[in-house]
Amino acid sequence: MHRPAILTFPESAKLARLAAASAAAIALFSTQAAADAWGDAERAPALLVHSWYEPECCGGGDCHPVPCEELGHDAYDNVTFDDYRFRGSQIRPSRDAHCHVCFHDYYGGIMRRPICVYIQNGT
Image 1 (cartoon, helix red, strand yellow):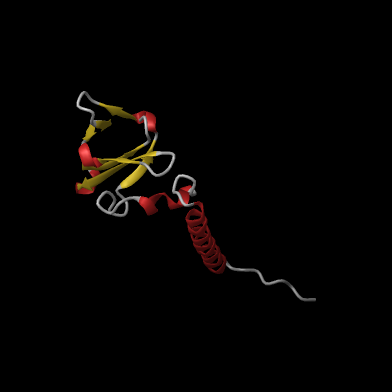
Image 2 (cartoon, helix red, strand yellow):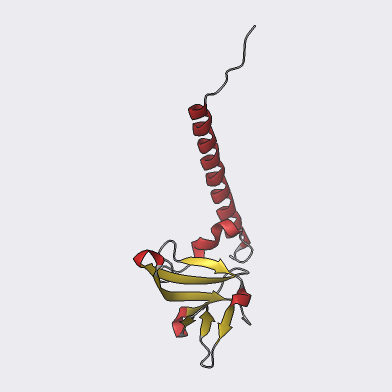
């Protein structure tokens, strides 16, 4: 009688990583094609959110979505988030259904500088 092969832990972990990487690659390419077909980032899946950040705002990990309700305005029409202010060209329209903030972290995240904020119309 033939017994089915049993994978050892290192083999099964390697197989799981390969499957996850393959699934992520397929999802990325299929969602990119879908976003191109849709013609706008608002309807594109969340997986592609970082694909539309302008380079001057996001250095690869400087931006992240935030609830629009957490953004405010001061008396000078700046956008505020926590204790930070975004002014003038730092304020940009969001290309999806969310608001986003971009900060450059210094000294391991102890200090940060606001770079850009992406807002919805009416936020």
